[in-house]
Structure formats: structure tokens, C-alpha cells
Image (tube, rainbow, N blue to C red):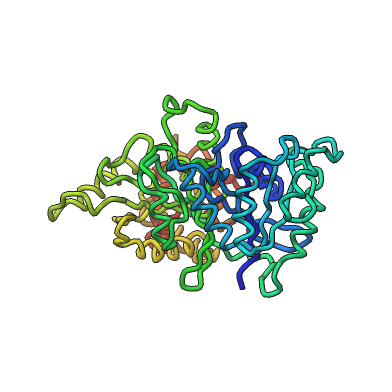
Length: 438
């Protein structure tokens, strides 16, 4: 069964994203005193009284606007409203009722969905004269809150869960694979998400920086449950001019932190750039499974060696993630996008793989026989035994006689020997060396 869906809508700058973050329990949506900051539908898992549901934040609605971004925001909001079980219509309790609120109210009424009128910015806890104006909308009594201060949120959520359909699943699901789609701006991350979902889930335009938040999308493929996190592209620091762009970089890094696996999208028309290296480096350092997706392959002029040369260039420039599989795709046409799911399944299995202590030590002992450990001033490195102590990513604790004798080159040799037997495709391997007796 699907989870209940709760959608937050309203005109710009009424505090929708602040409420979204408060309910989600962490700062996901960007909050800034600038209209139009939230552009896409942003998803999060939320819980109240042991009932789990999907929460959606939407961009500020301006129904009368004919400009491209507001029109796209409206289209995204309409999709969110269509999928929602409960809609939180947020209005500004300080400004009072205005024409845009009336237009949105009409739109929601036509949806036929359960709508709760949420009057925000009641920071003193006292009803203002402006609140009474909203009774005119005919949506029932306004629920007064202060999203900023957290006032009235509990009462609001008590009312929300009363309206969950009985056929929806509110239990916790721990089997979800979290995948962050990362890369610099305009490489096709949002187009890839939309192709996978078969719908225009994320706004796609040729305006750089369209996606500002990290956006969660739930998806099931061949019985595997995924959360795809589309991220704002990381720009060079000198290209970041406004606060919102700075927050977007933080959101991207946070999205990597929240993910299990990362799909690094590279533009085939540009090749690997310095920024790609930095993004990949962050995912690698944080121990994430990585797949490299070379996008826009459909518009590259090719000969018999094109893919070989491109892959060789990637391996040279991104040598620190030599373990990452490479797939050449077109998010626009859908070419080889299904291959990504095959790789995600393989990489996720490797990310969770455990090797028994006995098998691990057989591999280590054979490695030592084939290539003697280094020595210094007559003292040779001794490896006593090893054991796997963690997954996500796999981590091995190796007991030795002297830490200073464990050269990086020999550590890499041990890693290669383990990979020879178990592959660990797409997954970084971590080592901890401990002197026996420590």
C-alpha cells in the first residue's frame, strides 16, 4: 500500500517551506525571505504519533502569472495536489486575505481533496483581526500556527492524521534505497529523474540553477523501493552570487550525506571537469556507492573507439573512484536508462555485503604469500588477522604489529585482492589498522 501524501500549498512567502522543515524535523527546503525560492515539488518522509507519511512542499503559487517559472511552479503544484490525500493551504495571518489566496482557494476547491486552512505567522499565539478574513474562503476554521516558532504544529498534525485514508500504509519502511543524483548544473540530472519516473517531476528548463533544493522522489522498480534525490548542481564558488545558491550547495552536500548510492551525471559534450572531480570526491570521502552516468551520449559524434577513449579519460581523471561502473546514457531519449537500475541493484548489494572472518583471512593469507609485506630497518610488517566491522560502506579492521609499516601501496594491494574475489563494484572499501595489544 502507498503512504498517505500531505501537500503544502500557498502563495509565495507565506512560510510553506518553514512549515515543511518543521514537520519533516530537519532543514530540507530552502527558506529565504525571497518569493519563488522553492520551485519544484520537494518530498520528505515525516511521522506523527507513529504514523508515517509523505510530505510535499511546493513553490509559491501565482495563478495569474504568465511567466515561465511561475507557470512551471503551478504545473508542479497541480501534480502534487492531484497525488495528495490531505492539502495544507498556508496563508499569512499578518497580511490577511488577498486576491491570490482567493484564486488558490478556488483551485483547491475544484480538486475535491481534503483541504486544511493553515493560518501562519501567529507568533504571539493570539488571534489577529486578519485571521477572521479567511473564513470568507469557505474552507472551515483556520488552524493558527507559527511555523517559525513551532506553535500549534502538534494540533495541526493531530488534525492531519485524522484525514488519512484507511487504505494507506502508515508503518515505517526501512528497505528503501536512497539514491542521490549529483553533478554540476545543466548536465541533465532533472531530465534523468523525469525519464525514470515517466513524468515531469522536476522542472526542466535551460535556465541555469532551476533546481535549487534537494528533491526526494519515491519510486518502485521490480519490487525494489527507491528514493531518488535530485540535487541542485554544484557551481564553482565564484559563480555563487546569492544566498539561495549558497544554500543549494549545502543542500547538495546534505543530499549526498543522506544517500546510500550516488549517480554522478557527466555531460558527454564536455567530458570530466574539475567540478565533477570535486563532487565525486565528496561522495567518495563520505563512503557512498557511486555509478557514473555519461549523459547526452546521443548527440556525441562517434567512431569505433569513442566510448573506449571516453572511459579511459574518466578513469584517468577520476582514478580515485576506479571501482565505479560507467554507463553511457541519454536522459532525453531514455537510451540505456534501464541499465542504471541493473547497476543500482548490484551496487546496493555490494554496499551491504558482508564477508565472513574465515574467508577474509584466507584472502589475506594468500595475499601475504603472493606479495610479502614491506619492512623497515629489519622489521617486517606482520598481519595477524582481519574482520569486517561494518557495511555501507564495507569496512575491515586489520590487526598488525606496527601501523607505520603499513604503506598505502600495500593497503591498496590488499584492497585489490579483496576486490578480485568479491568485486565490490561501485563501492569504496575502508580499512582500519590496529596494533595488536592496542
